[in-house]
Image 1 (cartoon, helix red, strand yellow):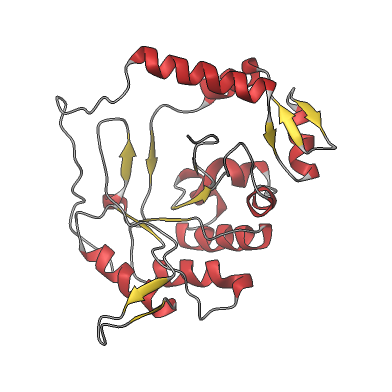
Image 2 (tube, rainbow, N blue to C red):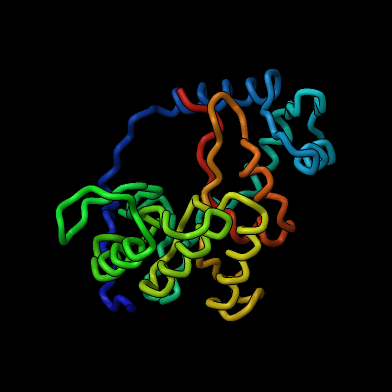
Length: 249
């Protein structure tokens, strides 16, 4: 374990892909703010509703829906850093997210694999997580490791933690997962990351793990993800950095 090859990124100051113009982006942003403010987003957990209400949202507790004034959203966006880094356990494998680099990584949550020895299709297992991660670690073209398949031979309550352990045992690149569904698992994942980083303070400086919170269109944050976000403010701020869009078309 431990790739020493520098990560290859797609980076060129004159190479940019612009799908939407500035006016298109502005229209999408304005429409999103209007939807969040007038229709709202469903958060089926009292703690989440409490937090939104404390920060100025209108809360419909009977429907678990929050409507957030655009000023609250825009204020939060202004506080978000425009540039940050996804750290690896090996500092040489850090990934600056600065708008000038494009990285490739694995995708996640596969439930079947083609067995490399028999050629048969079967359910994925923990050994597959380890084997695929070793390949990821050796390839300079793969910048980060999103836990690629599900360890279906592990108990569901701790499956995501088994997957993280197998991943960290086989790579020093940045690790990402969306297979952490509950507060119990999230706390375990934070503790594991803190041990690897050298303690809680070191983890806050270099969050070597990012978790994906998957929203459901239209505008629902499902129960498992909501419970996961019950972690303390410090942990959420420094660990849960990557979120999918709240609305999809």
